Image (cartoon, rainbow, N blue to C red; front, side, top):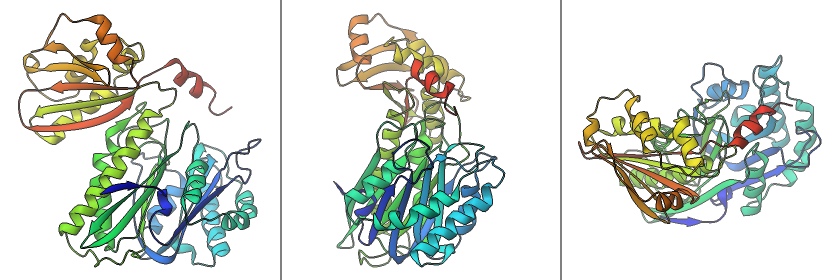
Length: 406
């Protein structure tokens, strides 16, 4: 597997683009994205577990059951959630894209992100579609525009692609994602759109996506809020020409591994770009009795407000880490726990066998001053390890969300 350029346009047969159609009033930032394959695709998807679901999520949950897809259209600025005409607007958006592309509505998936409770003005989308279709490109410039068009409070785009050999054939996987606030395990206010030219059965594509999501997007947290809109979609058009993946073979394992690498890096970038964030926090719990247990413990650390605040302040307050482990709901022997902090500057152990150590505070502060800080938790009880990702809690998070709607 190797990293390549092109994002969602790296796989053969996919085009993408983004334009400003006026959903985001008074701004010229792209706010409408389109991903398109003239070749029919199989598709798979995962959606928010929030009981309050946005209309695009409800529509996609029905649409994704179909056998064939051509396009994904998504807007930023308005979430199209909990508004008077949200579902009919989602359907209108789907129909408009289908008509403009000359395809069936049931082959179009939709997405929205932004402010909850406002009606989406679909007429702006309808008016912008000719320009959007004209803007479709089969190279990285198209993926770049689409990635920017789905951003809300994100400060930088998230876009990646990989290639992998499957049964002697080169297969490509690309992705764009957005997410900065309302991010919590079970996905957050994220949209992630993946494309691949692999030939793979729909059932196996769904299985690979679920496996990968649990190890990537479901292991990040920015603020503990789970959104109404999170959607993770993948389209596969088979144009790579590999023998179709029909069973859980070596090819399926390699495809899943490459997809996981892509999604883990997209998830890391989302966590690093958390609203107001100045640090990416990576917590690895290792020597643990079981992967589920390790994940619960690591998640508890990265979503702890006190731990997040300590990292923001470059304060090596290991007691907050141990405390977060303690309320995670898992039984363990605290006298076996060792905690260290690590970054590109160095590594320092701050707690051993559940007790604090004398350590160099100046060195610790320097370690915690780097952009990415690792919290290493050794449970000293088993063989499994899990890594989760979060970010620090800064003054800017409150500023951003204090007037997000207005």
